[in-house]
Picture 1 (tube, rainbow, N blue to C red):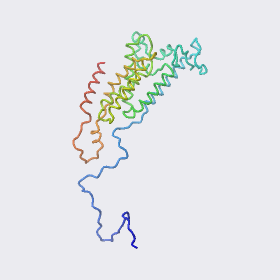
Picture 2 (picture 1 turned 90 degrees about the vertical axis):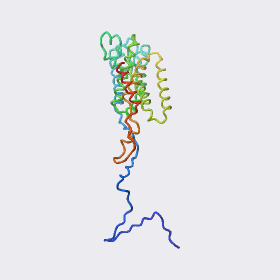
Picture 3 (picture 1 turned 120 degrees about the horizontal axis):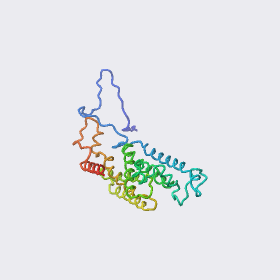
Length: 301
């Protein structure tokens, strides 16, 4: 019986000295070598999020300090909620249904009070109120939202742009709140959070060509914003800060969250020596137009 030979068998012949060595035919040396294989295609840089977690810790620390200053057992004439917490006990639910401090303590810590901003020139309250919360329920809802929304945005755009978007949107929310709410104080990061949502919407519009399921992403985001604005109609919720933060973040998103188009990103990653055809510009014309219009609106506003 003849022995079968496998096509996988590799035959090696060692040439003797003086013999010519025949190598397999190589590619034309005039062409560059093929580009190295990449394990994963990442057209945009991925950042390590650290600023949003710092913001969350800062808000929690400020709430703890506020509760320490509040000292309900000493300063409240009525029985406190959860008295076993000592000076961290909550004020009576009739005064604060969100399980938090008194209004006077929040005002002392930097809550937005229009009278003090206008008559006593305490404009810093437009910023400090962003880092204060009225109670456990308030800070828990806001920090969970910040965790899910902010971390993803910081991964995509970096801490500088997301940090500016967060703070400036919160400032815009405070401005609109100060225009319409003059009898009560206002606290919370809701304006800044709505600014992130507004930035996500403008980012979707200005980077429209990057997304595959464009309309699905757009309607999902609009639905989330609509639900949150509807919740702002509930009592003790400052919806003007929500609207002001959203509008500010929407226009800031056109300025801060603009992406280059895929064609430009592709040519940046091509090895030298390869021809890729026509060179594309970094951004599309409509992206420049939206950037300019948003910048003008923000400056004028």
